[in-house]
Image (cartoon, rainbow, N blue to C red; front, side, top):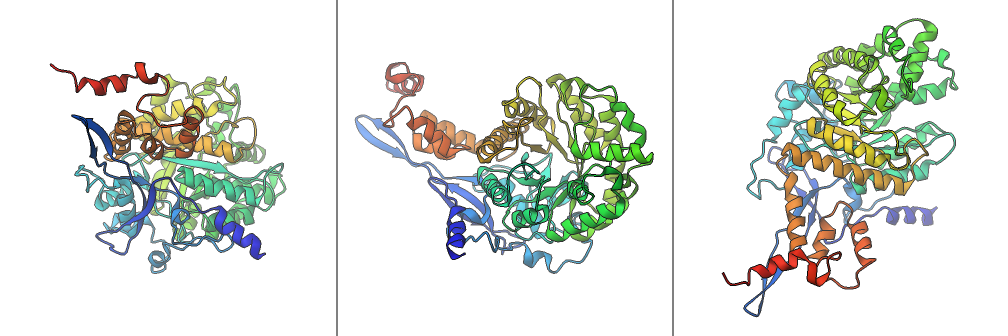
Length: 532
């Protein structure tokens, strides 16, 4: 047992090249320690009049999702879990004192200042104006335009914010199935997802040991964790849809709240009267939770117990400060079905539910499609803002074409970039295995990095205050032929270095593809030495 424990301690200890873990303090709450990654850069070297000159380059601060795993001073043991960062904050709070509860009173919590510091990185030090202050965070949460998923029972998580006016976040889906994967594999995928940059994690396990898998993930996850409670409720009735009821679902909800789940995807927007709208679709209902609850409604010929008991669901979530992600159970499963009557009827119902959640101080955001061709993406965003009163939008992709199995991380990232630019607050990643198989560790890596690209592209387009800092630093490193800095500033430093070393034995002051004579950057540098 000791050998295994030691193995787990070292296996998930991360480091990033030329980086150190640093902590920024708060002003309202000086005891805050907001973890960031500080990337140290090499000097720019030039030759002027035959002499070597060096110009120092300032370090770059990077939003860090790796938690304690990248802190060399903290020992990690997967059997015992991560340090309980938020325990001193939440222990003094009462039931139903949610982030929205405090925000409506103008009270800035530790979580609110924490996320403001994370979002800004070091904007203040760089004299970059930023709107993202703790007071702004508080206002956005009070008005429902942003959420901080942070269950009081998950003190290991580091606060993050989901909202249109903040960095676009990404979610990674993991979870076992009845046919593959186990607890250790899912923990590994979870932890590595945090290293590669996921902002939240959804455990979508449907196989054996659902409770234990979720427990192990929660205790070792520094980012918020979401679930679809219907999956476990469905397992409790052995897959018999007709046997489902409110009591079973309620007990499952409480069980997961007690464990520490930070947000739930619940398909409360499906109404009996709207299910028939999907009858003529090319691909019917593709959501697992949506199909289960739709069949339940049809068999019982009554409204879903999720819709009927939505106020009860909110009451449970309010006790723990769990956010609700209103699931799009009637989302389109192909581009042909995009923006149809079924999809939009459910969205309209979600708008009603948003206001009911806010009345109970429950944070809520809206799930979206799915499969949508590019020319129909903007309509989704505009309709969601209108019907759902500005609540944050959370989308899977969307995939802009259906003909690229094994490459759907790309087809979806195209749509994700667009809808992120239009205002979507969080993107659910897609891996190359989408539609084909359960993703493994490398598939998760590709999915996370692909979606970090999409999210960052949207941040640049939206003009987020801190978005261009890293781009500009890497661009300058590229122009200066500072190869090491290029790799270290990249979203995937190890992979960038791997590709470079495959074709280069030494670092040179010319581009790899151009060679020494055709390199435009090298020629551009030489222009400075030309006489007028």
